Structure formats: C-alpha cells, structure tokens
Image (tube, rainbow, N blue to C red; front, side):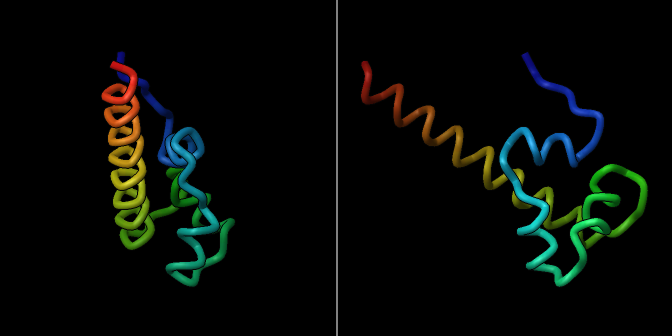
Amino acid sequence: MERHFKNLREECRFFGVRMQTISEKLKMTQPYVSQVLAGKRQNSAILGLCMELLKKRKDELKEKLCHDNIRTT
C-alpha cells in the first residue's frame, strides 16, 4: 500500500527529513522552506534538495529493511 501525502512538508515529517537541514544547506529561513514544502510558495532549489533528501532517506530505509530481513532469515 502506497502512502499519499497532501504536500512535501508532510512527507518530510513522515520520513524524518528535517526542514532545518534544508534551510541550513540553502541558507534560507525555516518558515520560508516550510511554506514552499506546503505548496504556498515556489522555489525550485528547495524542491530539488527536498526531493534529493527524501530519495536518499527512502533508500537508507529500504537498505536497512533488506539488511535486517537477511539477518533474521
């Protein structure tokens, strides 16, 4: 079952991608990053970094899940 999110901000929270990390890397304020991820403003740099960090986090979780499954079988 695939989980659906209303916006990227919710998805970041679910997967543990911190807005603080995005704001620090791009030298932008957290409220602005939050507004972009909620879909209220537009910024391609924020969206790009967010998607990159989400992909990295999902890959880490998949790797951990696969690794844990191998150890238990």
